[in-house]
Image (cartoon, rainbow, N blue to C red; front, side, top):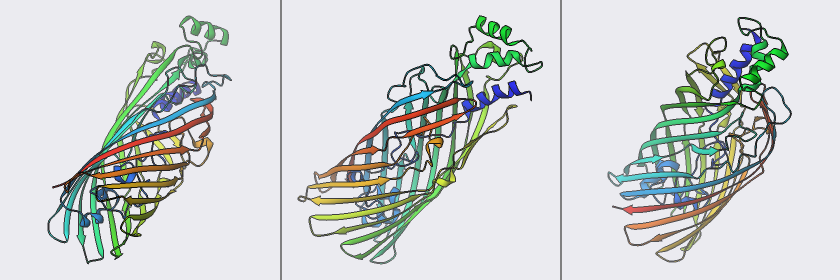
Length: 461
């Protein structure tokens, strides 16, 4: 394929090649996972995730913990408010030293994360349950005319995970649990394409890829069409979705009546997203004739959502105070490259990611003031899996983050209770120096932080 046309294709592919780059500062666990699966544990910074087992949200963190629970319903909601303000500069795809536009505004978008859990003992040792959660998801939005528009404008992702589970009390001190996961995932992403930067080399290319015009004639022709660099952007949109599955399992060991140790594992979920690419404001020059590159097409991309493993401990110091700790490993090294395939004539797009596995560590406490009120606190440190500034993008400008969390529980009656938790995430300023020949480069720094407010109702049936 002649080089100029290949260049247009690379821009077309770049517009779709971010199909699975699904994270942004709104993601609450490193990468683009969401850990907000329990309002009660939000107050502890999820420090005892696999060991606390104080309500039906244990279905997500460790299904073995269901053996401690009555017939129960938990419904929760989490409001996630990320801040992501960029300062820096960018180039356009043909290397003009300055891309026009603003700083994009606050790229963070308010997110709402719901949870639902149900447990039902069948006898003294066997319990079944159902969890419905959102393990991955976010929404970010930059201004259409910001300097990084050729890298990203909108990123919106949603997942739904349906998790039927079962737990068995093997002995007075040991319980085991197992669950299956049916997971739906959908994504929508947009970015701008600089048609003005494509026009001159397109017309200069010899037939059949171009018209073979000299530089001056090509420039004049493009100007007459209104196609000047950064002067007439098209908008590319990619949408895709898929259903897939996995499993989770756990052990809960109680060496004494005051101490619980939990081990939990969630499997990798391999998604095969299918969808389409579409274009808005595409100039007729690029939708037909010699340059039919901005045309609707079917696309597909595979992504392996990571496996996780956790160890947690919970200990009652006395009737009022409890302490807890957690360490969680996430296998983000499964995300080594992004490959997008097209049903049309375009070749695959391959983007190097090279993410690393990461760890999350947390410490927390409970203070039971009386039979009605419990107060909670916790801190956590969450590593970023992104290896360096060159692999950090406007869609995924994640960095290490430190959690500070507070919360309370209020029992209104023997059957009804509410839990409220709040966390502030101090995010290490993410720096990026990223670019490709087809999108230009972007470099700079984010001022990033996150606030999360969570609440749930617990109903013993």
